[in-house]
Structures are given as structure tokens and as C-alpha cells.
Image (cartoon, rainbow, N blue to C red; front, top):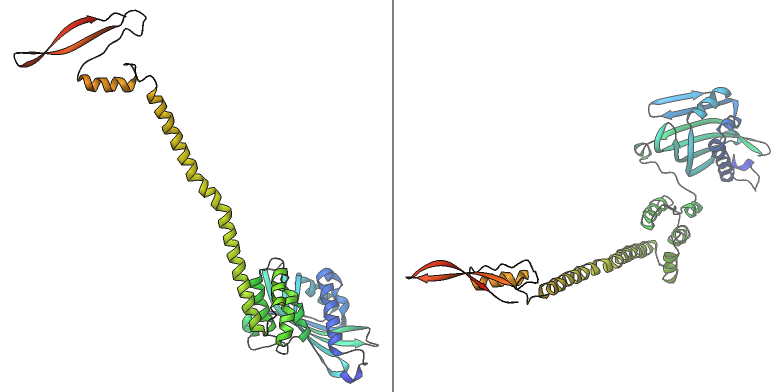
Amino acid sequence: MASSYSSSITISKVGSKFVQHYYEVLQRQPELAHRFYTASSTIIRVDGESTQSASDISKIQTLVESLHLSEIEIKTVNSVGSWSGGITVVVSGSVKSESFSGRRKFVQTFSLALVQPFSHAIVMNDIFHYVSEEDLSGVIYEKDVTDIFNIKRNDSETVEDFTSRFTKESSQIPQASDDMKISAFIYGVRNDQLVKNLKQNYPKTFKDMIHQVRGFVRGEKACALLKDADTQKPARAMRPKKRKRNRGSRRAASFRRSRRNTFSPYHPMRQDHSSQIMDGTTLRTNDFQEAPLVVTLQCPVIVSGFMSFDVRDMSIGG
């Protein structure tokens, strides 16, 4: 029982130390996990309706390694004194495995026997149970109050997501006061600007802090939208002006071409204009030779009130 331990050793410390060492070996060197057990140990592995058990050291090792556990994350550790100076340790968390995709939650219960003088613990019984949300409904595993400072924002996690997770996980520690929650959040949020804002206007309650954090997140999103708009605005503003200058340049070039040599009767625009004025008069040239210009005119002649045509040649000297 607890009274059999020295003043410097508590049940909670022994359980936490064992859990830390056990899962470190299980993740990094699973081939050595059998050293935590003895020939009289028994383990059980439960996954849904499937249950496996082993009592021999070699079978225990085979069953432990068959789970292929990796990336073990411990959520809670609770220890209590047991019969004959033993300790019962209940652990909850999540793991990854080669046997399935994603993460799965688990609860593992150890029955430990301590070897004098408390140098190490031997696992007498071990039950590992994969659980679902339905299995955990109505069951509360209390955390130690200091565990609230272990809630920290991940590198890939936004401030908004971390705030939601912190609120949920801190609610599982009912003995944590508002001041402790605020301090733990500031310690774990890992955002310098937000921490500075919270320290300058230190919240009175946890609810007040959440309100400030949500305002900070909204401000960050608004600044990001304005920054994107300012980055794209110059490019959009220059395009219409550029098109306008291009149209103006084309019009000016067209006007200059249209005014070039407009005195010549052979200019395209002058010829079209002359044709309209002469109303049927045809101009023919001698292909721009230096000889005297010869123009043949077909002019209408009115005879007896009717329109008829006569061909007359006229020579204009050069």
C-alpha cells in the first residue's frame, strides 16, 4: 500500500516513470519489450470483438511485436496502490500502426509489482484495448493539474485550431483554475504577437481570453486578405491603361498614314473620294511613267433628254 513507500517515492511518480520508460522501449526497441514481463505474467490484446492473450515470455514478445505500434502519444496516466504493495496504472492515448491507416485510441492497464528497493517494476498483468468514441462515452480519466502545461501548439496547427483543442483538453482537468489555464495557453500557443497582446491586456477570465484570441484571429485573416488585394491591385490597374495607350498609338499611326500624300489623286483615300464626286468618272494612268500624263475621261452626254455616253480623248501635257 501507499504507506509502505518511502517519503521520497509516491505512487504517482512510480507510475509515471514506468510509463515513460515502457513506451519509449516499445516504440524504439520493441524486441526488448519482453524484459518488462516475467514467466508468470499475462497480457491481453483487445481489438473490437477480437481478443488475444499470452502467458509465456516468447508468446508475449510475439504478441507485443505483432501490433507494430509507432508514434505513441500518451494522453493520461493514472496510478493507484494495489494489493501487496503493487501499483495499478491506467494509460490512455493514441497510436499509429502498420496494420491500419491514421491514428487509433487505446486504453492500457498495467498491474505492477515493485522490486525492492524500488529499483524497477515488473508487469504482472497487461490489458491493451483499442477503443472508439462510443467506448469512452461517460468515462472520464482525470489528468494531473500540471498536465495542462503539456498542451502545446504543433508546427502545422493554426492558432484557431489550437484554441479549440486547448479548450477541449483543458476542460478534462476540472481542478485547473482560470489563471492556470490562461498561463498554460500563453505558454503553449507559440505566437509572439498574440502572447504580447495577451500580456499587455491580461484577461481576467479564461472566457475573456478566448474572446481576445478570436478577435486576434479575425484580425490576422483580414490583414492577409488586404495584403493579397494590395499585391494584385497594381497589375490590374496597369492593364487598362496599357490597352488605352495601345489603342491611342494605333489610331495615331493610322491617322498619319491616312494623311500621307493625300494631295495625290492616286492615294487610296483620295481615289475613293474622287470617285464619289465624279459620279461614274473613271481615272486611268500610265503606270507612273515620266512621260506626259494621259487621262481618259468617260463623261455623260445628254441627247434628247436621255443619258448616253461618248468617249473623247483628252491629252494633258506634263
